[in-house]
Length: 289
Length: 289
View 1 (tube, rainbow over the protein chains, first blue to last red):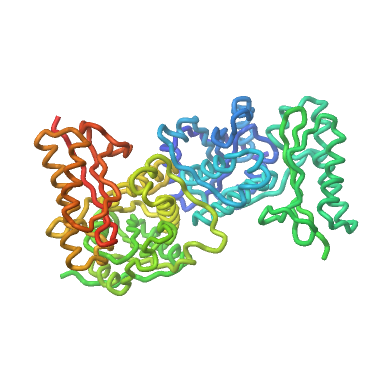
View 2 (spheres, rainbow over the protein chains, first blue to last red):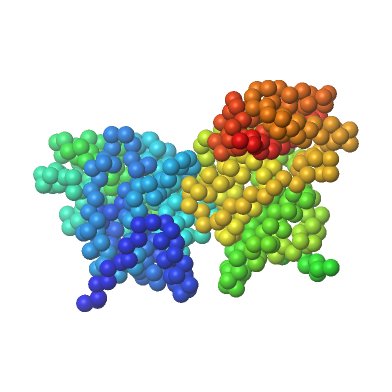
């Protein structure tokens, strides 16, 4: 068994910069995994990817207020710092950056990053201002850490697309890596928000994955009509009695614009509230031609 | 006399990054002066400041389309590359970054930086979208060059304030330096746009500086009423027959909000069209108390 080193815990930007300068001095490539904590295997897969590619791994834990809308779950978002640090110790993380809110958004903060078309549909429509908050916070964290590579999960597909767009458009020196979704044995995509679910709702939540699987099967069987596939996906989701669908979308995997026919790589994406917990999931559908 | 080395001319971001990595390898501090070319003594004072503080000096020459509004002077903005490079050679600049438009804004560019209150009044009101274009281009250039310090002129006072706000809010690792206005012997602030003026208009353009001088004298004589001072400034400007005032403003030097009484450091700022050439100038008024 590998030695379980606790990562160095840093709470201020000034201390973080000192540590990064020291790490850089050793010509070490820096990998960065920004998180909101409540860590699970999905996050740990990102940490492992960073550890594989880089010499020095930084994980931030920061529940970013600016990406939550009014009435969303900012205040009740799970905060599990001790357990998180234990998990990171087990993965060989070098530094855990855990800033307080006012360390990140100082008084007078007044600058925002707006990504255009990629941030508009799907979660951009359901959660106005969400991606503006995400892009701004991620850019700030990238500027604090100045990593060689930063790691994001495919589960937040649109978020990853927005961040890739931002990184390209703003000429960031950081490589953006996107890693596969990690799922529970029954297929539910891992998410910090799964903790909100009662055991019964947790059972019902599997309809998200079931509907994505059905979409894949339909395409495999030759179905190409997006409307037909989406209708069948909705039927699967509605088996869960209290499911409320925010969207079931079949969109171009790069532009996120709706498709009528499955031709190129198509993203099947959904957002569903189960027992008031909003869950998202997605997969890429590929027609054989 | 010092040896006049021509700076290395680089046109692509990829080449630029290679040169910067090589310069960094020598542990050299990098100073950066972003310009739109048509260089004059104002720019050269920024270059000298960079040379004083840093070991390796980069100057960019890029007429940024996104900071010009429709009907503004983007297409006729003076482009004097050969003369510019000669001037930079005389100042010991190491690298001149001269990208084409499509090297900076690639197809699909869709990310913009918005600075809030500092970008709203004065030129923000007269030139909608101007500071969004400035902030985005400057952030891109800073990310390309990754300098230790970047140098801006006080002549574009609001621009410097917007960039300082952006740099603080986005946790940029670059120090932002703001250098004093450089003036012609008769007081006209140096500007690439002075070239637009006919000799007669060039003579009349001195009313900008004269009105700022008057403001300083009035404050020295004990006048504290902003409205009175602004009215006297307007009178001086209106001596130039064809002068059209965009604004004559007395504002808090940090918030750019109008003041009624000169108490703390107050910015006197003006934008005036002489013979259709829009000129700006400013100074800080300080009451003795």
